[in-house]
Structures are given as structure tokens and as C-alpha cells.
Image (cartoon, rainbow over the protein chains, first blue to last red):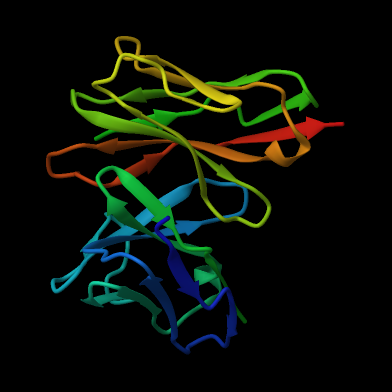
Length: 114
Length: 117
């Protein structure tokens, strides 16, 4: 089946630094990837839609300059949290559409900003 | 915009019994997909079952089945013969098959299911 590899699984960074999270489709080409944020025991909130070769589409209320998304190839999308602050601490998950109507998810990244 | 509502924040069931998780949604679209995802403590999202809106027949995957009522915009999940490994958070999700929001998944609030031995 389609697999999305997400790294790192956990990261701790200092306030003010930037962190990059990678999502890679291993056995298929993902023209579109989705980035979600999830707080404990809550639902997944869509942050942005990443399209290969074009600018990402951000959901209302998501700061484009803080959450930089790059989808430079058909197998790799990255989310960079810039100038991270403790309120950015969360669980981030990526997802890709592997085939018609099918979605596969990365294993998630737990970000802690200290 | 589409909305998905799960009205049961938490549910519990005894092992081997049956439990039903409810989900309602709101959309003006006619062509769409509905999903149930499971998120165990590992937080890996796992697809449980999928339903295409144009199919009248309810989807079934082993112990998991859905009751899809398109007119009522209801999509409940029935888990039969519950197992301890079914303990997880369950999300109902909606995706348009076309239009400007094509491909986006909209999730419900989630239901935490605990299976007791």
C-alpha cells in the first residue's frame, strides 16, 4: 500500500529557532499533500494544501510566514516552522492522496518549543 | 463549507460486544466520500472504512460496517465483536469529489472509544 514517511517523529527546539518537518511519499507520486495540526484529544485541523511546483494554499487563520511549505518534487513536501514559540508546540501530521479518493497519513511529528 | 459532527466525545464497550459511533455531516454537494479513521495511542491515522456517496450499499470491512443514510446526512460506524485493540480515537471525515475544495478532508471532533476486558 501507499506509504508516507514523516520525519522527525519528535523534535525539541529553542524558542526563536526554526524547525523543518519532512514528508516523503515512498512508493507513489503525491501531487498534493496536506498538513494538519492536532492538539491532544482534539481533531485534526487542516493548515494548508501543498501542491507540487506551486505555492501552497493556506487555511484561514494560518500564518503563511510562520509555517512555510515547500513541495518541490512529487515525493517530498516540507513544513518549516519559523521563529518557533511555545504556542507552536503541537502534533503535526501530513497526508497525501495516493489514488482516487484514497488518503494516507504520515506518522506525525511532535514539536515541543522550549 | 462542509461540516462533520460527532456528538459522542467518549464511548466505552465491553470486549466482544457491539458499539455504534455516530456521525452527521452537512454539505450541498452530491458527489463525495466519507471515511472513518482510527487513531490509536501511537497517533498513526489508520483508515477503517470508506464510503462513496453514489453507492447505496453500505461499506463493510470485516468487523466494521457503516450505516450510510444520504438523505439524513448520517454516517455511523458499527464495530462488532469489539477487541481491546479497537481502543482508539475515531474520526469521521468528509471529502468532496470535486469543486474548489476537492481533495480536502474535513474531520469531525472525534470519539474516544475504550474497550474494556
